[in-house]
Length: 239
Image (cartoon, rainbow, N blue to C red; front, side):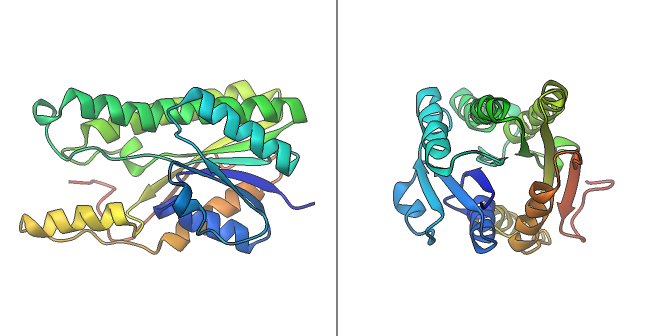
């Protein structure tokens, strides 16, 4: 029987690339995102489309129940859905934007981890992989919403690791720096428009393969934190 994974934010970017990689490797993939039309583009008989908003508790619960009902179990969750918000200092950030980013990046991850944890406890174990960011360690300017939530994701990861230890539920975090996605392209376009140099990027496939490495470990081994990033981007001593 093939292994199974739910990937949130699977309609684009890192989530889409990771879903395609896991599908190619024979996993049963629950592709969760708001856009049902984009999910329909993911080809494969082992793809289970889960159109849902990660900020809606009832929709998230229904999606995970649907997946487990069809796949039989959930071996892993890639808790990936997220958004940046606006690039601005705090006094220029609308409160509505702050609330939206917190709701997606933190509450959405909590809701998905909560459902995965419930099913994994019932089946005797599993693995949760949270998408952090290098912003979970070192922020860049104008990222108050995104950086604050990614710091909180690290707390979520650490606590899930402790709470899951006795239940055979492993939890790790992948911190990604500048995978070439639409979001990073937009950031680079903004930098260029402001007369700045575009940040170096890496192929998003590198991220998909890193998530696969974490997911395929036996449950008695765990990558607690992994950083995968474009080699030439500022991070150590970032300015």
